[in-house]
Amino acid sequence: MSHPAPSLAAEEGGLAPTRRTSLPGNLVRGALIGTVETVPGVSGGTVALVVGIYDQLIGSASELISAFRALLLGPNRIEGFKKHAANVEWRVVIPVMIGMVAALLLIAGPMEHLVDNHPELMRAIFFGMVVGSVWVPLSLAGKGWTWADWLLGIGAALVAFFLVSIPSTTLEPQPWIIILAASVAVSALLLPGLSGSFILLTIGLYQPTLRAVDNLDFGYLGLFFLGAILGMIVIVKALQKLLEHHHRGTMIALAGLMIGALRSLWPWQDDDRNLNAPADDWGILLMAGLAGLIAVVILLVVDNRMAARNGQ
Image (cartoon, rainbow, N blue to C red; front, side):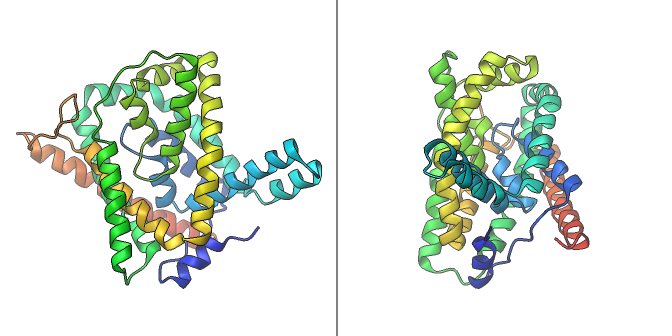
């Protein structure tokens, strides 16, 4: 399988992403992605970027979709399926998925408790983590930005800022609503900065979805999975093309999305998402935010050293 995105990044002046193939490392990376996906306002795509597997996951997902499309539509069904399936980076996909599912099953309940009972503290921690994470797409984009690059980044930031400003509502979890919500949420999951959990919270399905995971409600989860697959088919192909042909611009846009979406993690806000000035607890929350930022810096250093040691 060819991987044009890394070479494009290098050609455009950015840092070429290192490929991660360590099985234990990818289990941990998947667990990190699954953990943050339970937190409204934090994107699993952001973590995938930070730990260096974003391009690999998008490329593999695109090949997997093409494999099943070939199997269903032909003309050479078996041969087409095998061809695309062979291009999937299974040493990345399988351990990442196992880590994600394990983390979701283990963390969903405790994380729901923390978010419900300590919302300001949790937002402060993840605000710092996302601030630290923005360096990753910016480094991949490289230097020497043009005015068009700045417009793209600012535009993406404004779009994200607007989307996360929409007040939450409550919808009854009807089957068609679950499917539609899942398709939108998985699209947000794949875009760093936009959180699938935050989308679910906006439409009132965050708590029902966490309960379904915690209680193993397979009826609800089956509908959610169907919607996620439908959404993934659309967004993955689009992202794969963008990463292949416009890697620098894609990284700039992703950085903008992450910056704009920080609004959703501002610690001081009311139930309608109106932003408030810092309160008396600003010192504690500032320390929490710095702790989140430092955690990401440590994660970046450790992950890059592990990748270099393993020759990845």
